[in-house]
Amino acid sequence: MRRPGRCAGIWRRDDELVVAVVSRGLNVLEAFSVPVLRRPGGLEDALAEVGRKVGRAPAVVAPWAGEAAVRCVRGPKVASREAASAAAWEMQALLSGRPQAYVVRHAVLGAGENFTDILAAAVPEDAVRAAVQPARGRLRLLAVDAEPCALWRAARLAGAAPAEEGPVAIACAGGPGTSVVVGRRAPEFVRVLPPAEGTQEIRRTLSYYESQMDARIARRYWAGPEVPEGFVPLDLGPGGARYAVAAGLAAWPYLEPRMSFLTSEMREDARARSVLPWVLCGVVFACALGLGEIALTFRGEAGRLARE
Image (tube, rainbow, N blue to C red; front, side, top):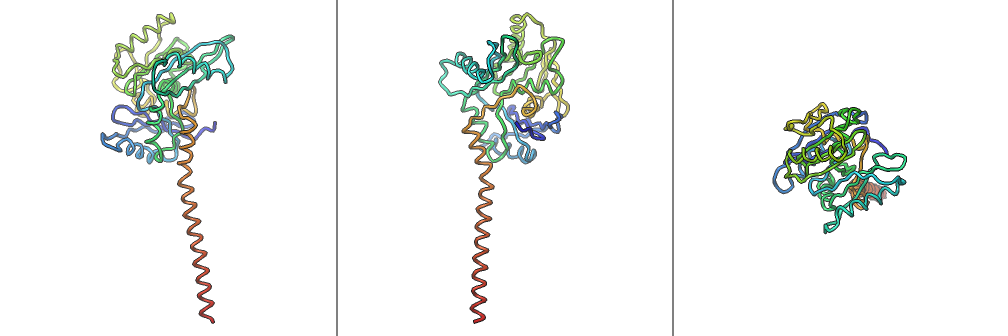
């Protein structure tokens, strides 16, 4: 994959778009927010404003809505091409009985002598389309990624992960759900809680991890404003912890784990829309060139008749 010189990450939190731009050298170049007005076209206008500010930088977003299902799976050692089947099987078992269509993706976290660790995720297809459609013609959309992946990449940007002293937890609230990620060298435990759940449910989730893994969490980081008691802010410099998720999304081309919920149909559509303006320019230029040649022909003919 060709890595761009810089990339923008866009995370929707309540009525604003939180944006960070990260360079190939893993520096946070800028961070800002754009309000989303509660009116028809408000999201499209906000994305257009972001597009004007980030210029030609490609952008990575997380789904604006829709309940994602994310799990860390340890299975037998398999080839990379077989990991997709393992992820699909895990998500099928988790989502059985749900009527809507899901886009399933995976990332290989690591492998041992006889096992493979996989991060499997599923997002409703409608939620992916809802993130893609408003961005058309306003952003160079590179990927639609899962929020937990962005959290772990943000921890890597901040130097909080990988952790040698013990597992670290990163949590945030404000997107379509409350994401919780725990791990040492890579994510080991991931949950996306319903958005209505408070910090007490996050603490219960972390206690569950400690009891199941027989390990004590060394540090608890919060990616966002209003840091709860018992957590420390995941500070990435410009903008502070408020922009951590956006910075993690922006680090998509440079750090693992990463996945993209764009389907081949969505990618082809985005590519066609990005090429269409240049095709139209070519048609207009060709028409102008053709008209110019016709004008020169008539001018030459008129000159000839005048001489006669």
